Length: 147
Image (tube, rainbow, N blue to C red; front, side, top):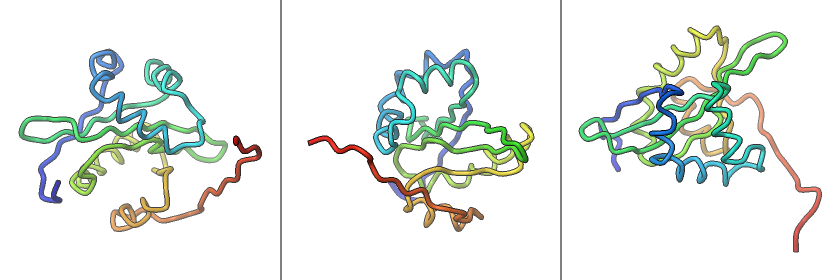
């Protein structure tokens, strides 16, 4: 899975969600495993269905084998509007980065002032060369532990 792999992105319109979900559901569930359980798979599908979350699929340019999925959401805050890269899962991520400009442009058309990415500290290393900066880190501690 080299960096010279040619990839292409496409946004998945809501009317094509049912066709695409079986192809990427394993990737979404894999990404959800790295969260604290803020959303279930069912909740993600509901948010995609209502347009409260957007799906972007990354594929091999030659045969469009699916390499990954990115889920975004537009967040309207009191003083700004953000495009948040909420979940990302797949392979050969280094070959996807050339397409981030498309995602940024889409965010601009929605009136977003910033693009943010939520994820593990390892994403800092990958996204910093693309102009992303680390603003803060989210730490957590479980209040109850299962035995």
